[in-house]
Amino acid sequence: MWEFVNAEEKGSSSRNRIEFLRAKDDIQAALDEGWSGRMIWEQLRAEGRIRFGHTAFAKYVRTLIQGKPALGMPRKSAKKTPPMVAQAAEAAGIEPTPKPKPARFIHNPFPRKEDLI
Image 1 (cartoon, rainbow, N blue to C red):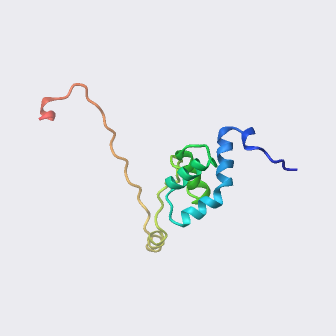
Image 2 (image 1 turned 180 degrees about the vertical axis):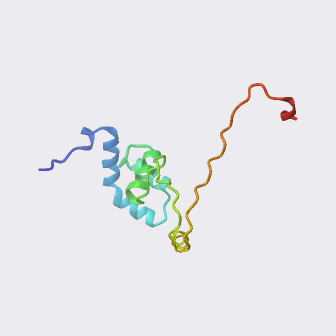
Image 3 (image 1 turned 30 degrees about the vertical axis):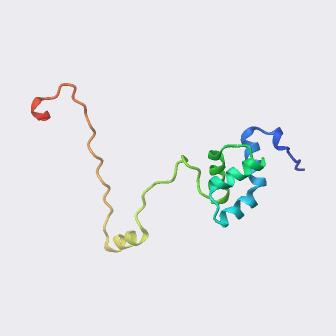
């Protein structure tokens, strides 16, 4: 059986999330009306409905309302060949060639004068 957990009994991040979720419908409505996130946050803070900072508020808007990953989270950045290009290459029998890695930089603590001029 689920028990109601008071926001004050939880840790601050849990309390913040609970406060945000309580106001989520109002936040969504204000965003749909064209209010900025900063204005919504300031109004909710003034009303005493939330007690956390704008950074956390923006993170909750991004993740819980917009469905985007939080900033600073690693994204899957594996570069894939577009499907049309891959199909055309496969039909032509062309094997994809990997790009060579650039040469590493090696610092020479004793440079030659000819290289510096």
